[in-house]
Length: 258
Image (cartoon, rainbow, N blue to C red; front, side, top):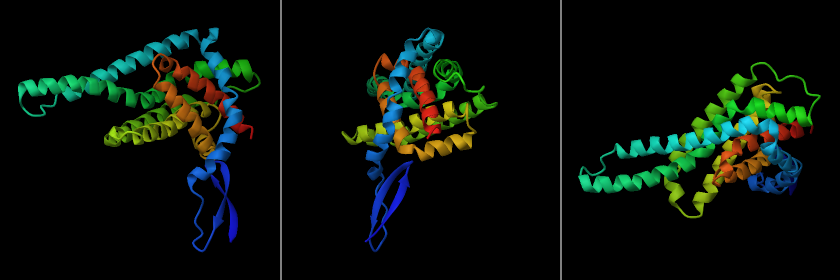
């Protein structure tokens, strides 16, 4: 039996190879990724404290207003699309379905919220990241030129991917049990990548930021699942943009130091 070491998402796992030389499954990297998450997880209280810090008050207000406006816009947009469809051509039946369509619009908007929030964060990255870096990493140089454009491009691209994939998987979200795995797994990955790239490009070229993410994929994915859960909790989701940006600012420094 030949044994070799393989790297999955920045986590090292040992795979036993037989005649076919099959690699270890991706979940074999989860225990190692969990251990690697601990240093990043230790900075989470600092990110939580940043939400209430005086330097974040203006951004906090923008985050709350922006999240509420985004959610309301999503509900109205999805509701308008559903109401515009004459399902059966029978007035009373279509009117009844439009009521359920409104409820469905709320649910669908809730599903799409994590991806949209990650895109909206591009407007909040600089003030939040600046406050965190000045407080905890005062020796850092100024952010690299072009970081804002790279962050916006990355955020919008991932938001579009999140919208398309969530809509494609919508029928599977109706399957109990599987819906939770798919929702948190998919959006956890996209949210982690969206927030991390938008923060990391302040210090690294976009290609380098993506390389750091790839080398720590499982670690950041677990962090993204936690952030996605926060996004689905009423009231807490109003501050997730600040929380995620502050946390990924700490995570960027932690992962760059390895």
